[in-house]
Image 1 (cartoon, rainbow, N blue to C red):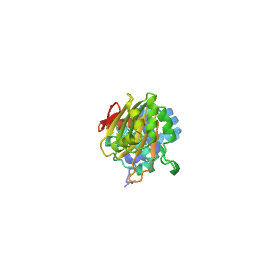
Image 2 (image 1 turned 90 degrees about the horizontal axis):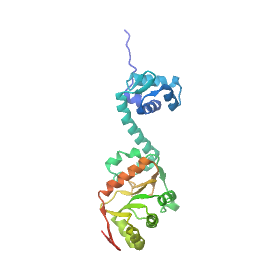
Image 3 (image 1 turned 180 degrees about the vertical axis):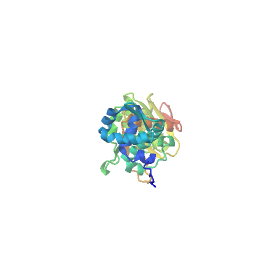
Image 4 (image 1 turned 180 degrees about the horizontal axis):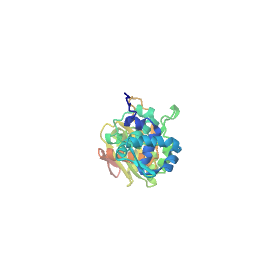
Length: 273
């Protein structure tokens, strides 16, 4: 008696064991493709890709219609979720040391689940001799920004002069500060601070709660995110991105925090908390 042993592999193994198959499935996400389009996208010849297509067809993840290939209903369901997972893994892998040492408490759950949108972030890691200086690329792009949203739970003396400079250029500025930071600015930089908040296009809010987030800035040009480490030592390391998705993520984070913030009233030279 001959016993037939099935060589059919599971869907998990089929999809994730081969990078080429993953890339192929994601490529088909946008619609049917001809074999020459697939070969060009994957930089392979037909001898290499046809066996992979056959495996995907055998498990009914891909359908062949004439000379084109497309995802089946089941294939679409898998690829939709797979893309989210792979994008998330890519973001975390790109700056693994940063993410693995950070506390996510200050980031709302809805945005934690969208961390995949923080693509193309570079790590800003100042050396010890520049630990408390603002990053030059951050300063350069902030001065060119026309819309600025900022949140800060830590004090940096250089920010007031920067915000004042872009306010004079009529940039739209909205700031959310924790109470210790607001008090420090008022006490140590009273004149500059009063001048800043008198601009009609500058809005200031107080964050009344104990923030688990160090700070961030999102403008029409860039996004800078500084997350507190899980240990108490503050390294002043940040993620910096020009990616539109990262800017959208940062804008949504600001909107979320703004719901908890209290507008600060400005009357002549008096700031009322």
